[in-house]
Image (cartoon, rainbow over all chains, first blue to last red; front, side):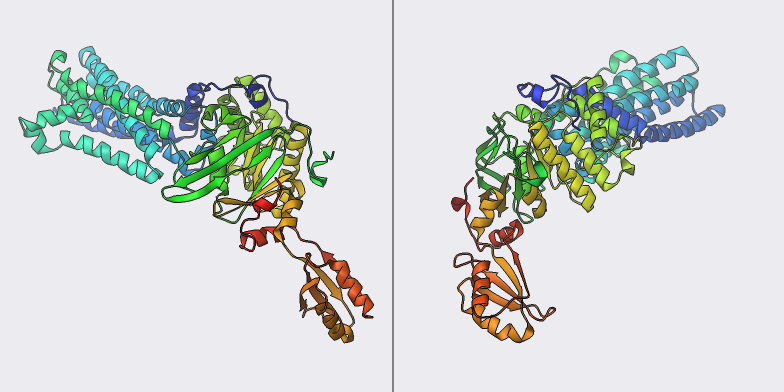
Length: 274
Length: 336
């Protein structure tokens, strides 16, 4: 028996078709299914929720003895959410291409008429949902810790604007690394190393205390700029108008890394096997 | 005209060319995996691409399926040049040698996804997927792909490659790891596709018996080059591969039989089968005679064989003769 072929949609009816098939939505939908129904996304989210719960408990206990006020507690939740949410999205994107390559599922995808950039865009969108999910989980924690609408409003704005830009930048970077890395392990290690290198400056005492080089490094670094902005707005209560400078590097990085990931898609290949 | 598929060579009316390569080369770094290959595959035919490991077969397929770029030369797939990859990809189905599967998906989800990638809407993709699952005996398997046996995965991979009813199907070792029944199922399906759908099949395999049964055309690669191309018969005839005759005589007649056979030009070599006393194995030199010549010589000398078994050259013999270097470049001598 031979299967019936839908008219006009397959190779015989489709033989004259030479235009790319725009299917990034199909890729994104399938990736979302694999990510969330497959359990990986939920595992990441569970880990994130666990960490946030522990932090919230400790912060609340400290607040009870007046070591942390509400703003400091919210600041802790927001900065942790930005760091971990970005990490989760980056891990997923770093696995997106190199993982397929390693699992031998990439070749079947590459021989479809779907343009490479659509494959990358679909995967990028799916990985970004990890950040969106952490955002959704973080908001109730922030609301509980805030204790008032003023701090909560700032927290939501910081997460939506600054956090989202950082997450977009590093998710794209992870995907770009995944496109060129020949093994999944390399992709994940390099991505995590980059994330650590970006997160470290904001934590180093020498950088934090420096009055000249320190602020410049923090502003240039998209992740540390986001974390500093959260700290300045939520804990130090500095006005938003003074914080715009901390959005420049996350915004630029988001654009540059997204363009890089999409452009690298053209060179998407299987690897060096013969 | 024979359209019986497995029982003979598949022959169809449409003889325009599906795959044409002209001096196609694939280079990885400094290593030339495919070296100026020129072949033509007729539309609706089954072409077997043979060669020892490392001969360049997979690289050849990857070049033709636009996975790796050609370093030089040109190629067209149903008239579309490789420089127009979207058009080529729209017309080909590919089952790579190492094809991975998303273990968490079901077969239906997997096929529906690929149907949509080829431009079908969800309903069409699902309908086509269901038909293919039924065709490949997977319709009653709702579990995840991770639970599938090797044979089921191969059938699913073939279904995926056929989801858009491609004009040309590239299969790299489609029966690798399958049991004999599984191999037979795949081969029957391929022959049926060629006959009923007119699909051109580019089959890369080590199963020479299967190639002999279903392929209209064969190309043998060695060290990146096509060293023989033509029909199975053309390749066997041109390879110089030996035929053999096993002759059983009474033990006391062996010395006389040996002497007689050595005196004939048709017997290139004679050996004895120690496990079966009385059996002589004669390598026939087809340039100077035939098995009948040796039989006649024995009868004329008064030696009456108790048994006579002739085995003509097979594709496997030709393959060994060609790839072991006995025939360095016989392509010129073989029709294509």
